[in-house]
Amino acid sequence: MIIKQKPKADLKMVVKGRSVSYNDKGKGKMPIIFLHGFPFDKSTWQPQMDALAVTHRVIAYDIRGFGKSEAGAEKPNIRLFADDLVQFMDAMEIQKAIVCGLSMGGYILLNAVFRYANRFEAIVLCDTQCITDSPEAKEKRKQTIKQIKGNGIKNFAQAFTKSVFCQETMDKNKELVENTHNIVLANSFDAITETLGALTRRKETCSTLGLIDVPVLILCGKEDIITVPAQSELLHRSIEQSKLHFIKKAGHLSNLEQPEEFNKHLLKFVSGISKK
Ligand code: MLT
Image 1 (tube, protein in one colour):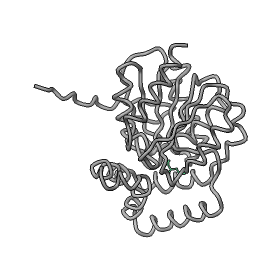
Image 2: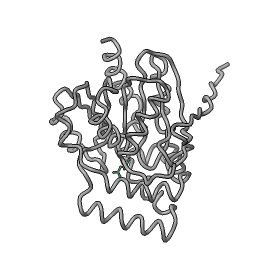
Image 3: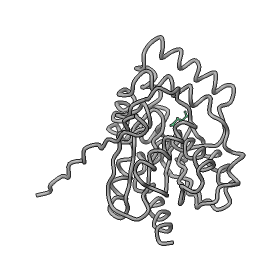
């Protein structure tokens, strides 16, 4: 008889007066921390948490306002989210970690690695970019906020979910599409609209890439239409010691669309780091 392991309950910790929900699995000297994209939650790292916990300590937390983490009183911005990461590490008594961020998680990581260089052993940038929003993208986000304020998050959740997957995933992995849609819908109106504002106000980080002094892995879905492959190529060209892999048959959520391929690259990279 196969006994299915029950997922461990979420853990909770108060960091600077704000409750943060997280998962912490496995054992290892160098923890790997996962930062999710917008507008998702820590559960979007489940396939990586499960696979890597066999050999490493893996941690994923809900970014403020998302999942089960409190939003706090401050107006959200990427720099604040980067400070949150380091404060979370302090509270967990983690001096250094390998940190892996997808999309908005990558924006946070690129902000943090520049300002807190000595807290990172290595970084993994997934389906992300260093540029800021173009005027057209800013206008689009403004319209999206307006539309959500007028009609609620239902239409937004449907359209956004469609945009994060490649056609093959949409056609063949309906369960993943539905689960992801539900994660978007479970987030609050405020978290979504205010974080859209934070995304559009974010500063570029391209000019700081040359200063990154740790091993970097870049992964990107070949069919990502949100943070397009050319942006990963730009990261790769600008970060001397980086490795780049494109994931076939994947859009923006490459870690969920092709978890085996994604995990293969991630595991190889982190195993190389932990041996050093
Ligand atoms: C994300 O997945 O975090 C977002 O799509 C990022 C963005 O919209 O810029």
